[in-house]
Length: 233
Length: 233
DNA sequence: AAAATTAATATGTAGCTACATAAAAATGTC
DNA sequence: GACATTTTTATGTAGCTACATATTAATTTT
Image 1 (cartoon, each protein chain N blue to C red):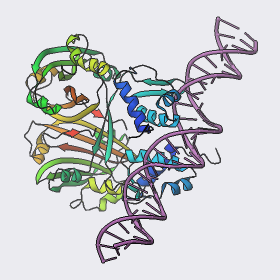
Image 2 (cartoon, rainbow over the protein chains, first blue to last red):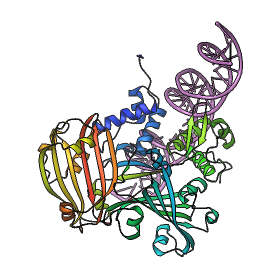
Image 3 (tube, rainbow over the protein chains, first blue to last red):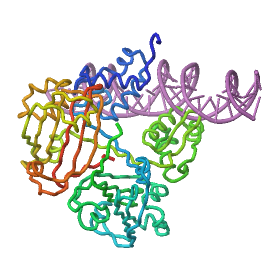
Image 4 (cartoon, chains in turn red, purple, cyan, brown):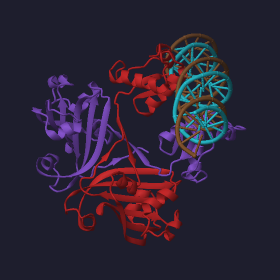
């Protein structure tokens, strides 16, 4: 064992986090200055700075110039979710991935999609419905709108072979993303496509992307009953 | 305006991110060495390092010693959710918060709860059901199990006055957290407590915490129909 | 006493150096 | 030629200095 292993910034971060968790520094408390912590832990201020930056980002502390560092009083539970390409997700479960295009039509943007994009007037959009299958059983049903103004290339993509999901991720960068989760009741076409009993509860992931101010796409991905999304931490 | 504003690490990060988005660096590409980027952008390698660390954490690039930095081929959609204390959440919507204890019983850990905690044998746990209200209407129904071994203090807390949710957040630090989302059908007691139509789809947040290897608590929070959780970005 | 100015202070940022570490490439050995 | 060893290289980390910036505290001015 080393006489004294010098601390890396992650080490400092973990130490401070531990102290916050065990109430050495209680919610609302002011932490010592970076310099003092550095002196105590035997490292440089830069190291403490790096650690604090991380804790601040994680929502555990709040920093203010001159004001010092405080432990947040209402620590929010912050969870990070990775939402992979559906094919990836299926394959990672060790299942066989398949994909079926259900419909593909050029339509004018309906009101609710305009709302999601935050745009004022309708435009020509490609409306795509498709089904992702795991081991030949329905897995996720997606209902997608793609703006043909920002993404005209999509019109020449053969969506029977490649999912819009995948094509967009690979070819269309976005600058802003909005994700939300909700639950919906299985009814009509949705239930039928997913082979889910009518009335069962389905998990919905809604994703909307923009490039600059221009809409790219918005999807409602409805998962089969029992679907669960877990955080990485 | 400055002749040449030197770049902060966030500036470098944004520049690199922009290049990845506009395909200057395409998925799979190897980026130049930190040093070269630094030379190009007129900053120090440390600055580039800091920027790259952030991009790596965000899942946009992958770095390997000696191997260099590569743009990730399958950029994951990474979304961060803040899950606040329920009272906060209600109050932030400008609604009046109320809370009702439904039941509070000492029970032996049922199998499914043992599974959530990842423990082998049952122990004495406090089983609490409670309802959070917004403007006197049901908002979230929580079904919680608290391990009395790790958290004996909970037994002397008056849960009719303070919700276990709040007490735990304020008094019980945790070291590990697991969060998952799913959907469930409104039935029986659940539907009744939430005044939700039987058969409607409800959004469920499941949270489990540990302190070291010891379980603290696990909750299933079932929200009223229409509840939606959105990412911060 | 109120307002304006100045000083002090804690964090934020950037640059430099030096060395650690992992992994690939090159070299040497059998 | 197969395997082991050394070298090279790109990132990772830490320390130091210097200065920027925001905000509070102290001081001066009116």
